[in-house]
Image (cartoon, rainbow, N blue to C red; front, side):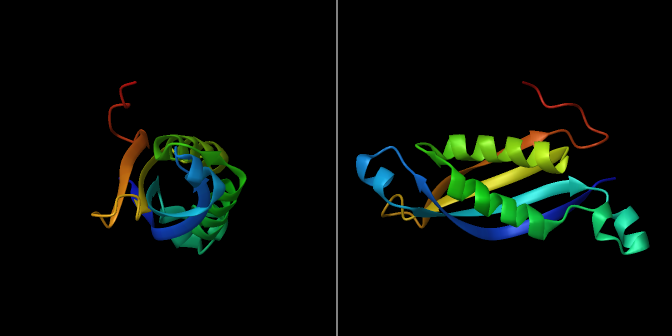
Length: 126
């Protein structure tokens, strides 16, 4: 059994886009994350150090957005997922990234990626 920490509609400002004008401004991205962990040790002891600290994860995502600029949301998502998995020892995550206003007729465009392996399941194919 694996529990999931949720972070929903986290907004970050970053330089993102392939067009020249996009390279001159910051744009807002909206992120939803599911992070697999076993919350039982933390719940049993009421100890934050035994779970994923979502405040620290959100701060790291904000810092990542400030420190990087990419042309593609695909690159942003892939590199962010790897950073979070490496720095917070996250075995599995699902990241949904939305870029509001990128297409005038759509509320947002974006993508969803899943990285890692949930305990008790088959490893993801590469």
